Image 1: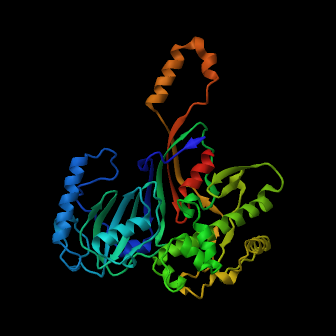
Image 2: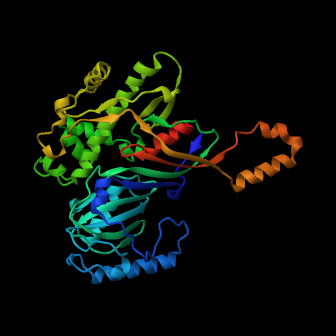
Length: 408
């Protein structure tokens, strides 16, 4: 048994930008940040005063003046003062990236489509990432569990996928010692499928053109049976999340069948990890597993691997879906192209440290003192240990899958 995400501060994710992105983004960090989301201890009265002061500042610096001068006292030297796009570091906890973007857009009266980011980050974590806002205010922002640090200006927006990967710092409690692994299977995990674990179901309904059912599920107001029109009132990014969730479910199912065919072959040399939609298979001898390109099903997808091709075709038949369904002519803006995804993910720069806790220290002293009760204590549950992990994963890979592989 193991636990993680006891608090957002126990699961920290820092986005690592790719080289192309770093070319057009300056690297200064604001000097006088008045609030720190990394701190668990927040003085609530001070917090309220800070937010009141910020609200007053925002009232006197309306967004309808996007070309105001940079506040040089708040930004280090080297920040570009020119360019159509404003760059920020977004630090958040207890909300996902889409929700954070929506709140920022509402606060500054900006269309959400003008706010761009490289990748979505989990809700139940403390995360850092870069965002760009077209003609955004040249200042920072605090909104409860959201903090924006203004970085500078430039002429390129941040696009989805423009990141190298993510660095993780995680606290885990477990009664098992971690496995020795340097790579694992690159599965999609729970975060992909939403709070109610039904994002993939909505995505499949979209592919099946059951727009009426989607509108009912999402409780949309439909006028004159115009279901497509109702769906278009939703941010396109949200609709794509549903479709990508279904693609992710199909990918996981494809990989499970591929692993059974190629690596397990009737032996019991594998273990299972749980996720929101069932079980996933991990070979015991991961060091011997070679990487393969597994298609993320969509239109235009191809593979030269006959085994994978047969698995894909059989899976689509069982789902009642065809490759052409991913071209949604009624809403071409959400059509989904296929692409390859690596079977394996390398766990780079992995460090695991067993932490000393007050609970452990007390129990150790108690066991030494009460030698006569050794038998009683030996019959109790295994000792829970606390570990601190840090590692890097390439973009699109899930830190929680690494944890489940190590401790599950």
